[in-house]
Length: 254
Ligand SMILES: [Zn+2]
Ligand SMILES: [Zn+2]
Image (cartoon, rainbow, N blue to C red; front, side, top):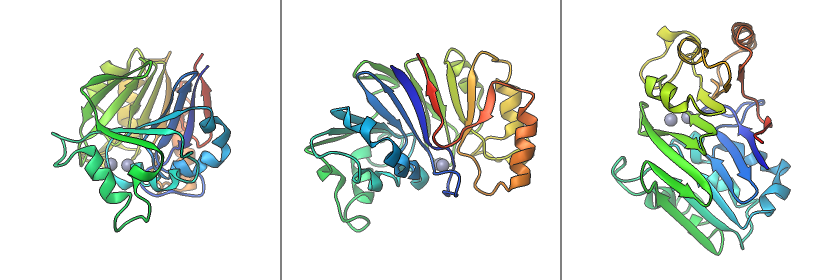
């Protein structure tokens, strides 16, 4: 068993259709969240899945609030007896380690429960290198260009998660062997993108040749109106392997 569930396909601001960045990947032994945005709130549908695992792992791409605020909701579904392990960037990319950064936000002045007290065993770790293991899962992380250090995350050479980044040639080569690419799409036109986010035009020019890859566009701009969404879907109709991700999408990876 191997599957990917989209819990939050939006960026920055939750909308009636999209919570912010959060994806659930699991196999028989391990459950792993990619980011913990407001999409964690969609766990109400999957609490029975969560209960099957003794250990919950979360990998954070960076610390912008739309990617971590759901850590304050996780308490609603996690069991005291589960082990919680959070992996994120820390030193030398930030001025402090991941544990201290998360502890400042989830606890203290900002939230009445301390993250380290969520369960009987909580560990918060800096990425132990550019490639590491979480149980039986191979993880690789790649520094990306964004307004703060953010990381592309590759899981088991199966999923490549690239959010909060410009379109980079390195991502094209590092992700090409993956079955699924989750890539952010913030603007439609290249000229509307500065140096922090990706455009649909740039994504199509760089990634559309890889026709065997399932490409899902994520971190969708909350300000797109209905006409813009229709316009994007019309453009994408020429590329059958590329679609907008939607909350509750469930992809079987067996
Ligand atoms: Zn973001
Ligand atoms: Zn960001």
